[in-house]
Image (tube, rainbow, N blue to C red):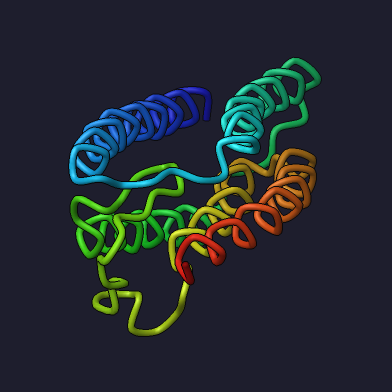
Length: 169
């Protein structure tokens, strides 16, 4: 179990770091096109939340392991998490240069209405919300799953409100 947990953590953390590099590149591109960023005040809380999420995942796993209280791997949650990665990729590909981790709007640009955006307004946030619950549940880490699902929901209320203002301006 420890080997699978470590492998999943390494893969997901490397994926997130690669996404941050892509996001930074896209931000530079968009700003060179006159993009305006909003919502910077709460961005640090999103970064803090996601960092704390991974720390909590690892900590809860280690505490449960040392107590001899690890659950069996949930292959149902693992398969669903893999499916979410495919949807995440679909979101990123659909947004192209517009995908990033900030709220940035290029004046005069049209909203993306292709890919998963045909079906919902904020598919990326739906994916992230499901990931935050699903990833810990692969390993039975219920405390991390519940606590960070609630915290993420609170942050998303602020985030989506800010993003809607930017998208409608």
